[in-house]
Image (cartoon, rainbow over all chains, first blue to last red; front, side, top):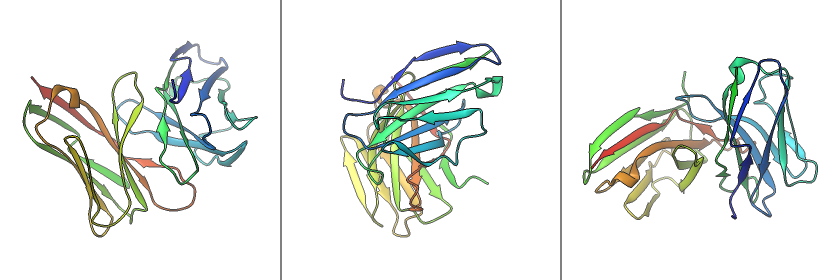
Length: 113
Length: 112
């Protein structure tokens, strides 16, 4: 398909474990965003990439969260020492350029037990 | 306090009825984005509004942005069960960071 894809669609892990969430943006899109959505809330911004560099990481809650986009396409969100409060849907979005409309993937549902 | 507020939080309507969802910003909007969310499908882009007084329509859904660019409404005409889902408005306040600030969403149920 031509849309944003995210893997895995669901992830269950134990408290303290490390997880990686992957995002494949729409081909050719230069900007990529990660958001986190808790139950009953709207998505909250985490980090924005323009090309390979993180242009704005002001939404990352603490230093356990880290994201990379080494080749300017696929991005990985990494969470260390997971906590139960990290349980949420992690959404990825991409746009052709930063000022253009963001298109979202289906999300990864993370459950930390 | 919430910088982007949506109302109502939830809505149940009979099929065929019209409905309106509102989104109010505490600041002047550079862009306002409407999305629909269903379980397992992420956010589906509906419409983007940027100019004061702008109105856009797609099928039976019409979105408007007021002249002051602080309030938007989404109107569905003759609702159908396929319209059910969560409607989210997202704000770009033109800060140059391009992140969207979202409302908490309006959960719509359409009874057949």
